[in-house]
Image 1: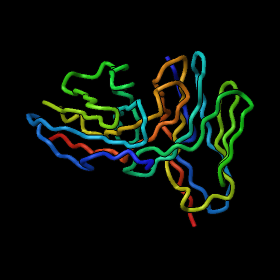
Image 2: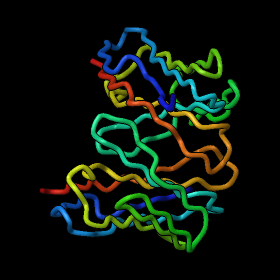
Image 3: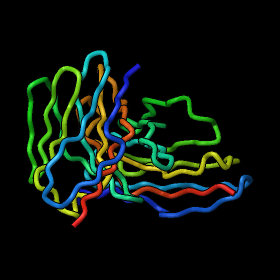
Length: 110
Length: 114
C-alpha cells in the first residue's frame, strides 16, 4: 500500500525565515509526486509535479526537489500570504488514484 | 475557464434526507473525481469517472451514489447518511485520467449530517 508521511505537522515561521517541508513516501513504481497548497475551507491548488529522482522545480518562493525516498518543499523568504497547508501526494503504477499525505500547516508571521 | 464549480457550498441534512452535490467543469477534461476530506485529514478518494464511465470505486458505502451525466457534470447523490459522513466533499477534474495528471479541485461542499 502506498504511504506518504509529511513533517513537520505544523510550522511557524517569521516573515523572511526560510525553511523546508518534508514528504517521505513508500510506493511501488512512482509515476509522479505532487505538491498542492490548501487554504482553509478550499480545495487543494496544484503547485508542482516531480517525476524522477534529481528533478527540481521552482515557482516564486517555492522550490520542490525529489529523491528516491522523499521530496522537499523549500520556502525562501516566506511572506504571510504563503500561510496554508501544503499537501504532498503520490501516484503509482498506471492508476488514477492519488494518495495524499496529512499535510504541513505553515503559518508565516509578519 | 480553469474552474471547477461545486454547489452548494454548505449543506446541512438529517439522516433521513436525500440530497445531491453537484460539480461542473468547462475545461474539456474527461476525468472527474470525488474526494472526501475530514477536518485536519488529507483528501481520500471516493470515485473516479473517466470518459463518463466509473473507473474507480474505493469501497464507498452505498449511501453515496455517484452519477456522471456528461463529461462536464458530476453529481454525488446522498441518502440516509450518518453523522460521521460530515466532511468537506471535493470534486476534481483532470485532462484524461492518465497517470501524472494534475488535479483541478473545486472549493468543496461542507456537509453536516445531524
